[in-house]
Image (cartoon, rainbow, N blue to C red):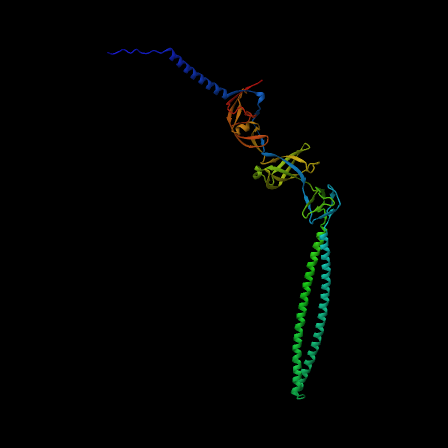
Length: 419
């Protein structure tokens, strides 16, 4: 027998559960909307931010660097020969003329070598003179012998020719003629041999004399070198200038090549500048810079680039262009604006903390009524210590927030409130 099933109705418990779930969903949605709304807008006191105006004006890319004033020419004094400081003629800071003595070193071994070399040269000179006199005497003897031989030759020739005519006239016998002929032939051979010996002797004498002169010249050259080495024990000023960084006291031992001081020429100044290594590819001779001194601006130009990098920096030498500041001193530090480009006209935004958070990809632009500031995308180009070059996204007269965005990275709009 079929039974009628009654339809169940909504119970109180079920209704309460559904109501709770609905309330939770609504609350969650409200929280999400509220949070999103709170993240997209933020009230900001205008006194806590910096608002700058976008302007079009002259722009030049430059970097601030520090330079130290140095003498234009510096000659370093090193010990050419080692020795003990025997005498000190001047003190550090003295103004010297070229050739003025500075210090004198004593080196007994070097001075003894000079004395031995002088003795050897004098001995070689004496021996060369003795050899020369002996060679001359030997030549005279050979010439006397040659004179005797020549005389005997002529006499034998005379007798031979006479006997030949007498033989033709049947005045003498053949035996007597043969004796004269043999005597003449002997004297011919003797003269030829004596002439050859004299030539060889002359050539040998000349060769020995040339060798002696060459050896003597070499010994004199060595002597002059030794004298120069001894003379170098007295250190002299190589140019006119001021003696600085002197490091020598009487009684000190100085090794060969050891630094003694330097001479700074009084012919002008240059500036030695330190530059960060990541600018190395952009720095070259001819780049200009300027600095202020005594309320006046002066120009510098790079003359030399030292490409060696030390502690993340490299150095350049700059020289003054035009007037050199009066009163400038060696060792003085100058703050220089080193130009990396020519001056052009560009759209500029003042530098500020906003760049650290945005990377120059966007910025807060102030609305026309000045009540809000909203995000706009921009493109930044070159920069210098004062400005960024704006390539895209802004126009002259726009006002933007350039202070730090440290707490604004998730905010879409700033509501500007005046205190």
